Length: 91
Image 1 (tube, rainbow, N blue to C red):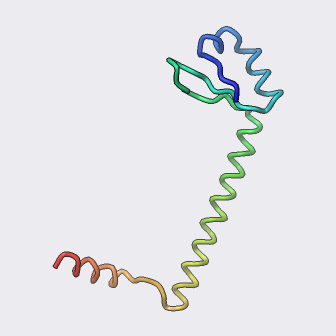
Image 2: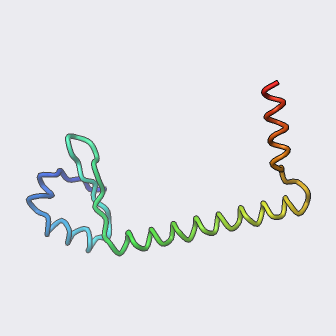
Image 3: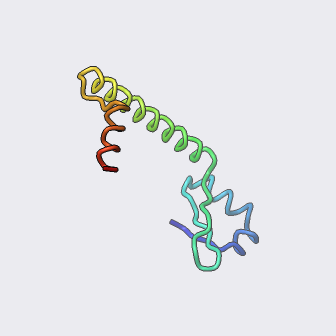
């Protein structure tokens, strides 16, 4: 991954933005010898954000289905079970 300093970004902003857009590769922005930010093409960022949202939703729905299956099979832990466990731990 390419890295550039803040000063270079300030001096060549339009050129660097064009490079990020054309290459679709992020550029790390360095400030005081450490990565401070990443410059990413907006189209790529939006696509990756949408993919992440879709993946998170799929994971959430899978976990809900698993919880429903456990509950249906009588494998769920009830609030009362948790309270009893906490009471035992406190004793």
